[in-house]
Length: 283
Image 1: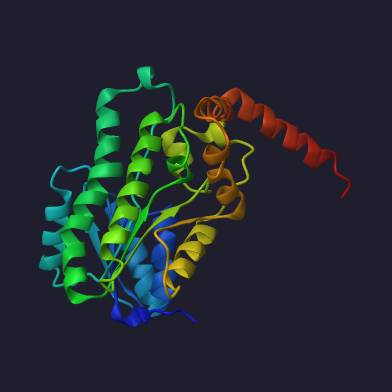
Image 2: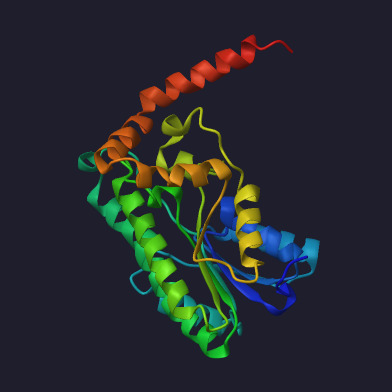
């Protein structure tokens, strides 16, 4: 049984139109939570809101918002207030990355990546967390990544951004842990969502054992339902093992290993080998 009575919560989810965000929305609606669904794609948000209301009888409000806006926190708080809503839970899930050598990337896209992956979680947390602390109830989940735990060649800005999110959120956990508000960072590894196609990491993740969005959300909600949840949680046992690599290897060794692991040619070779193995296995 969930430790929280979700019927008393209105939960804002960014990046709610697909992937982990949409899966969070479905899981929380099934537990009776009211939802504020935030993303850029209005058609997807409206379709999801209609689905959740029909399936679970909950209130689901769609808000379109550019999460790269320099005033995203203020804008989102104003939109929530205009809708007559009082948010008691935040899931900062939205994010995107770029894949390739840093020197080849477009500077405007990198600036947008920093805005969405770093500035938006900070601003949204700043806009809503103080009221939760004042009320002595609520929760904040910031979605980091396995990329936060080791350097990530070919995704240098993304990995650094997620390391920021992890450190930022764990610090907030310490600051708020006696307030009645639950704060923690969620770190998924390779997950089967649209992220890889959008970012351009399909080749780099080919052959990887992917977790599902349902796996990730189940990990997060189990952590949220704990009596005293810690400052962060990693989805998947193999990912938890992987996160420890940086503590046992030298920095040089870790960086060189990660550079090899993100080589698209290596990933394609691994995927082909696994496919051959599957074909050759007796049925």
